[in-house]
Each structure stands twice: as structure tokens, then as C-alpha cells.
Length: 266
Image (tube, rainbow, N blue to C red; front, side, top):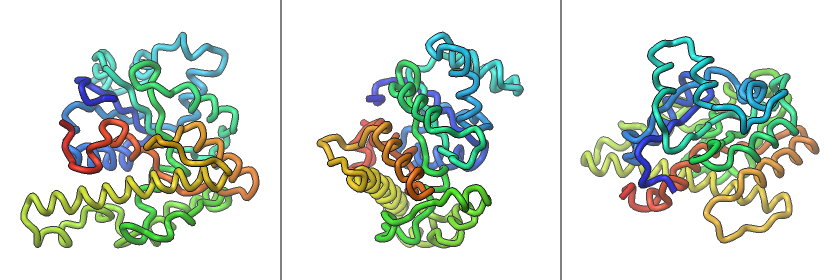
């Protein structure tokens, strides 16, 4: 899907957590050189207001919009470059006062092709879902949900730290102390294997969510983003929770499914 394309823009929501995670994943799989990661520095609902309110998103030049919003002159220049693909990594954040099912459904339905309007990877409820495992793998991961109440109280991030493996997000899947007894190659494989497991468990959970909602698994490696969103919105409406799910990691098999098996992008 992306393997033969030279330069890819990855627009992420936050300035720290998302950049650090995506830089790590791209580095682990040896594809960081072909990507430019830029922070949007605000939520997906701000982007919605600029692209979908009183305007046709097809009439909006996303790169020009980003350039106009950027205050850093050095970053502004990044939006003058040409990109083969545009990726958007954002959080659902159903606690946001601007959230609505209609808005997020419209955005997930629109951002479906990286080489055209861009492709959206939506994390449930937020990017911290990547770290919400007590072990790798975590047999209980399928049961993890985030309630609207804890999100509104700003308690979910604290819960992730408390329940996460090692209780330190920086060492979640990259604990050198556990891997450094191996050779350099062995250490790198150790870290990549852990990332593989996290990605695979999120893929399995996405299909489990659809099955929970009465939809069967297809032959595709990854479920459709719109189907996952629909199932999550039903859960939110019925029990005021969403299933914890990190879909930004789906970009790795989207880029090249073989990366999960041999770690090579070739």
C-alpha cells in the first residue's frame, strides 16, 4: 500500500505522547526515514470545525490549512513539501464538549485513502490505549473499557499508568534491562516481537469488538474503520463506555503486512 512511496506525512494530535509513540514504531520497523511526523496540537473536533462546518471538505487544501494554523516558521515549510500519502492519528475523546457521533462518523467516512484526502487512525478513547496492557500479551485486554465518567473526570490516563506493564509508559515495550542480556540483534528482535504482539492483540480485539456487535470476521487483515467506529458508538450509547483500542498501530500492517512477521519493509 505504501511501500514504494517516498515521503509520507503523519499528522498526530498531540505534541509529545503521539510523536514519541509513532517515532518509536516507525524506528522499530525500519521505516522512519520515509515519514515526516507533525503535531496538530489540538483535537480532531478542531479539524472538523475547519474542514466540515459551512464548507465542503473537498474544497479544503489540507496542507494549506495546516500551514495557515502553524505558528512555527520552520514547521510551516514542511507543508510546502509534496507528500505521497497523508496519515492522521487522532483520539476519539468522547468527553470533549464538541464530540458528536455525526461529526466523528463523517470524518471516519471521509478520511479513508492516504494517497487522496488522507487516512484517519482513530484511537479509543485516546492514544494511551497502546500502553493499557498489564503484560505482553495481556489475556484480559479484550475486556478493557473506558467509561465516559472516568474520561470526563480525567482519570483514564492515571488508570493506564496504574494498570500498565511496569507502571512506566516509557518502558512499556522497550525495557532495555529485560532485553540487554541478548546480542544487539537479539535485543532489537525482542523489542520488535513485543511491538508485534501489541499490534496483533489490537487487531484481534478490533475483530472481537465487531463480533461482539454481531458482525463476523472477514478475510481482511484489518477491519474497516467505519465498522469499528459504529460498534464503539453503539457501546457508548448503551453503556456509556468504549472498548480500549489502539488503531494507530494498524498503520504498520497497512504499510506492509510482512513487517509483523520478518520486520523488513522490503
